[in-house]
Amino acid sequence: MSVQARRLREFERRKQEILDAALSLFGEDNWERVTVEEIAKKTGIGKGTIYKHFESKDEIYARLAIQFQLRIEGELKKIDNQLPVLDRFRLHTRAAWEMHLSKKELHRVFLYCSRLEFRSKLSEKVLAEMQAVELRVSRPSQEMIIDGIAQGLFRDSPLPLLMFGPQSTFWGAIQLIWSGYLGDIDHRQYLEEMTTFILVGLVHHDKPLISH
Image (cartoon, rainbow, N blue to C red; front, side):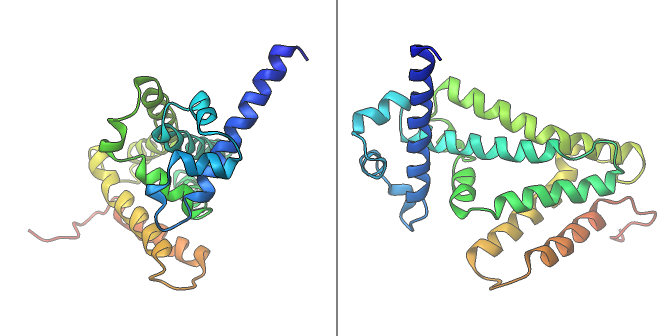
């Protein structure tokens, strides 16, 4: 291995150490107020070293969110696109569910980085990278819904409108669990209940559910 390659590997290793340290601090109640100094101390390096790897604390948030999305993308790629739409839907939902319940800190950072106010502070390069990953993650689910519409399984409505109910249900359920409101529950059982509820709302009904 060349000297340049070793230096690059060391640079990337230290970068990941910084991200890991930051994430561990984001488990605290005041996680949004964690400083670069605290992250540096947790990593065991100087504050200046942080800025050799990241433009700002906001980029640290963004990089953690990007890594999280890449993990979701990896899980979705494991799902066979040739499976029936309803089977794929359940597998997609389970993958997202398990990822968002895997670590509270990651879920927190993901939601924080979804704010328009936060994104307005990112550099064009980092924002573009984040949006590109988000597009790749959302595409399989969108294509699945489009397939369901084409097969007559799902209602033929504009995609953003059709997805509003499922997205609201999913995020609401995740927040209920992380808030502790539901107590100690069987996550798999609640996942099945939520998924069935969402599908009931998506499937094409011969008769309207609401009378006019």
